Length: 178
Image 1 (cartoon, rainbow, N blue to C red):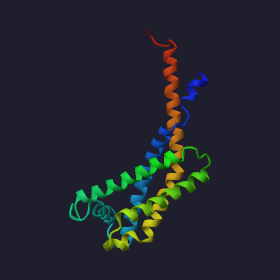
Image 2 (cartoon, rainbow, N blue to C red):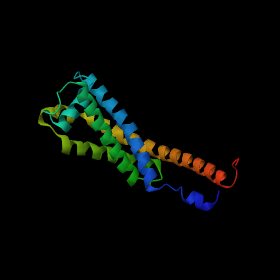
Image 3 (cartoon, one colour):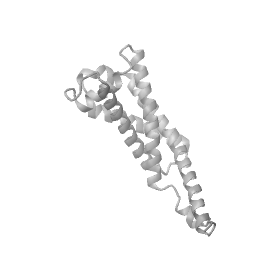
């Protein structure tokens, strides 16, 4: 393969954003599990987090408090926000080369997500839930996972692209059966 082929596969902004999106969704699923576990251990029910997010995002009149639609809407709102945070992280962290800086930047992204949720979705009747230490620790977990797994996801994606690019160039050089 010539040097131009590898130059075209450098970690472009788009691939970093896609790997950040993937890492954000994986970290969001882990954080949602953390939130549900903390709520269950506090005796408030494991489903409190998705239901509270649905009530905060869609407002109380839009959905009944306990239904599968509310649970799915709250979980989807969390995963969309996690994916968008991960995509923004991938976009901004595409040039970070060390694991320590990536982890620190990921934790900062988790804290930014925590304070953004507070600014956008703060409900006075849910102060016990949104203001608790379990929510902050879940966002720190989200950030730590985001900072830890986005780099390996990006490297795996680039490795697959290089393999596909090599196979495409081998076929273009006349190695076909026609």
